[in-house]
Image 1 (cartoon, each protein chain N blue to C red):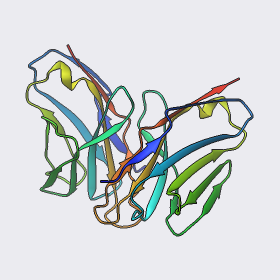
Image 2: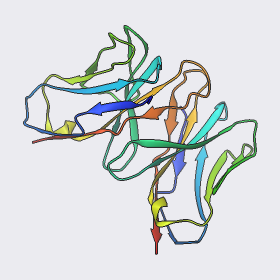
Image 3: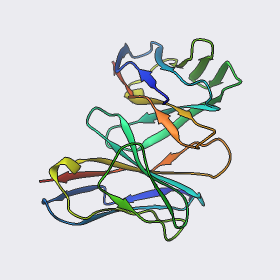
Length: 113
Length: 111
């Protein structure tokens, strides 16, 4: 079944640690996105990619980095986690053409202590 | 840039209709969407409407688009407790392919 997956679902980690949030999709989509969702519920686009070896920064500045080596995989990395990185991170994908609708993964809840 | 506004909270009784509203500033969007987010989950696409349509109905959901007033609404008929969630409207930019989301409306359904 075509779907979009995120791991881990929950992560509690200490300050200064390096972390990678995984996102994979089996939908055959070219476009992938990372959003940060703050406690006030608003979604902020932090990274997006339109294909392999293509990555762009989103509307909200983020200290995280992303890579797109394979079409189905779009990991997000924080080199040195800080408490200000505590948030919900949502990954999404969409087709290159069509209605632009995005399909979301279940999210990763990150807590940095 | 595009600005999308939603009221933050709506409370209704089970069985009543719910109407969630969304206003926007940029009229160049080709597609407009409604997403639902349940606690601890990602966003689920509920429905969408093309910018050349005024209304779309899908079972209990009715989407109304007033382009003159730049107003989008989602009506949920016979609201159930399982409809309790956060609802996001989103506008699709045909230029960038990105979505611009509203702040989300928390729908509380009381039994």
